[in-house]
Image (tube, rainbow, N blue to C red; front, side, top):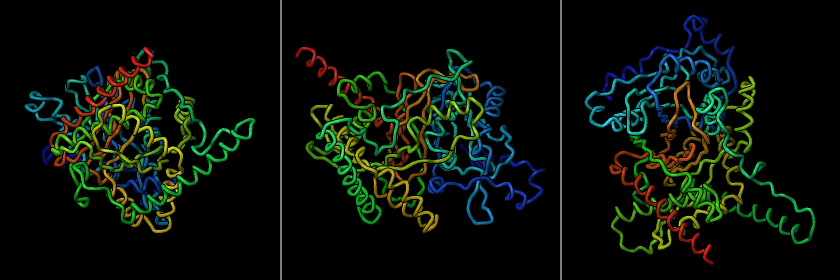
Amino acid sequence: MDAAAATTLRKRALSVDTAAGRQGRTALEAELGEPVSPSARLVEDFYIIVLMGASTPLNIPALRAGIEAQLARYPHFRSIQVTGKDGNLRWAPTTVNVENHLIRPALDPAAVAANPDKAVEDYVASLSTLPMDRSQPLWEFHLFDCPTSEATSTAAIRVHHSLGDGMSLLTLLMACTRSAADPTRLPAMPPLPARTGAIYQRPRPSAGVLPFVAWAWSFVVLAWHTVVDVVGFLATILFLKDPHTMFKRMNHAETQRKRIVHRSLSLDDVKFVKNTMKCTVNDVLVGVTYAALSRYHFRKSGETDTRKQIRVRSMLLVNLRPTTSLHACVNMIESGKGSEVKWGNELGFIILPFFIGLHDDPLDYVRKGKKVVDRKKSSLEVVFTHVAAEVILKVFGLKAAAAIFHRMISHTTISFANMTGPVEQVEFCGHPVVFIAPSGYGPPEALTVNYQSYVNTIMINLALDEGRFPDYDELLDDFVESLKHIKDAASRLGMHHRKA
């Protein structure tokens, strides 16, 4: 992307209605809405980028009308952030001109002809170095009407993280799309998880002394694990750092250009491993990540001691909304009660150990992942981190809270997240969607790993420092190969069980 294009992006017309703006700041403050949440203020420098591919060429009028009728009507998507008289940031409603949010980049024709995938990828990488215009709502659609290997047309949606967390944005996606099989209805919802209550809830046994003792003891274990995790959290802020590896950013003060890439995995293969190992999809994905990072590390480092185990840590974002909230919110939006939906960020996080090492049995990666994840489920660490972030922000202010948050992230190695998407093909503003690939940039880490399911695929999405991972295609290949080896091992295990 050249300097002229970057200047154009920064100088786009404002979406604030000029006639209304003549009343000045006093009139604007009188219309201020809810305060910007503490969680949203902590992710001030964080951005979400969602790539969506369509099987048809872009229909700009239909896209514009659909976004105006659906997406732009939600509170944070038609508001800007303004400092109120009390000194706090608040959401201020404004008039949205959708055209200002639809950006059609002029890609180099020669680059598109040579490799359209790379041309789009290069442009998306450039977004990580460009600011957003804060005088208008913080969302943009960058539209590419050139066929790639994956889609006929592509949209790169850039959204500031303060507008919502993964769950609220997924809610918007579900509410703004329709089933490709039947455009008159909403797409089929992801199945509800087994747990529908708070993470600390334990079903009380109906009868028996031993079951009651085991039930009571589970709360003792929960309390102990929480204490251990809180101590680890505080130690990470103060002094505890991950060892240096090729996955860790060295200079956290520099802003690095991010390369945002993805590769599709088979959801059926992941579910096959899940069923064979009697674990969860998330356990399998953690194991695949262990295996992929291990393959990449030992190949690139040239280390010959295959018994070596390196322990690094990941920041795992966890949604604190009730597990039924996606279904409930989409139903509220569809019934015209969208204003009652609670938007914004409801996030906590846990520090999840990741192990880099080679195993003779590929299933050992999944076993280790399940063990680590199960241990973290028996802790209130995520609740503590959410509350601690809000308290620190209120007591010490935004600068101190941001410094602490930055320090904690810089002492770990990667960020990790997993989201469940639509279970059937959807249409977005009349465009049949063939893939969804969410990622982001902003955290001071060299590598961010996001998984997103859609229909029968899981997309592995990586946001990487360009200078740190010039051969990022090889790392993507490692994820694909790791799942293949794990699935093959699960197949052999299944055959052995059937023979037994």
